[in-house]
Image 1: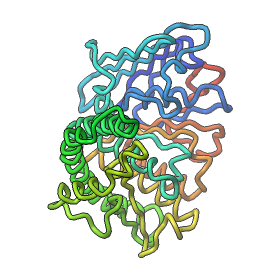
Image 2: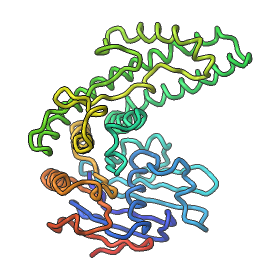
Image 3: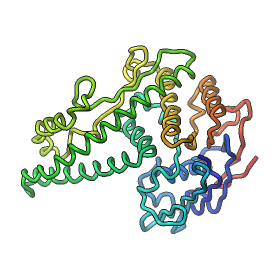
Length: 367
């Protein structure tokens, strides 16, 4: 996977900018609030159909303009592709791939990219929804069927939650739940089985990478935690287990107006040498595990797609010590991964690797 050109028109603080990244490492240097992260954001949006910084597309439009555009020209398995995005202060996103109109959800999987930002260093000890988003984003890029199933489950859950509120408020009959529950159970079971298989593969990759970047520390293991389930999930009886749990939770679900059991409540667990890293790991152990996890995401997508995705490192170098920076850069160079790095200080790169770009007030120039 290689990006050949990024074009931004009235996007955030860019009026009219073209960037042609080098095949390897690209380092965008500049002070804070100059527009470095905006470049990374545009690429990430093209890959996943949403920003990692805002839920409102209108915020991507430059102040004073009515429309913003971002165009990414890239090669996937040697074939040229384009993704074009149009954002409006009033109106819905318009997306095009190779000249044809597509829906937002069809962006996922077209351009594969992995973002590593400072908040990802808290993946291990942070809230469960962050780990679910990580897993869903990775699997959605690797597997269109998984993404389709995830969208179906999300829709069913929202419809069931609306119905729960209506039942609670006396606007619907409780018996109508029987129309939605079986569909949710079947969909949830499919998602869980796919997640379990992916986490098993991811755990093996992460363990090997963690050994490499930590100098032989205790091997890391990743496990899938099924909310409300004790022990290792039994994939042969998931439907029966979900049906029983949903019956048990039905009364409380109605009172609260929300579905309290399902893949949207599940989590990931990380251990090293038998130690729960979230509860007992040191900050250094947690950061090494987070770095291993993000690098394993690259390898996971490479195995699924046949080539490495583009790596986006947004101001993460300032959060890593010298050894971790060297291990990260060494991995990128060794695997020849096209990488876009944003940073405020060139001293984070003492070996002067890759191509450097200067970013100032919405203008990017090659150094």
